[in-house]
Length: 120
Image (cartoon, rainbow, N blue to C red):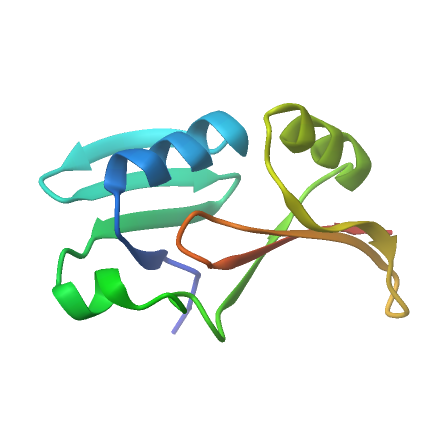
């Protein structure tokens, strides 16, 4: 039996804002809209953004807490320069980690923590 990564689904409070952030600021490829769902990709990683309009979800200021999503990039410094030029606030600028990767981090509009890593 073989297994493979399929997708990550993130519940968001404003679908158009989130699509614009991932597509325009982070250079994710936009796939399609289907009702309250948008599909994007970043290399082989598939991301589904799903609008959640439930009152408790929208009112919760800690959406995304405890969730960290990691992506691989060829050149983390170049990617960092690109997203900063696109107006994205960065949580951690590119940094060499003890385990050998060079990482940067940021938050999406709903508080999901996104890490971009270059393996050396």
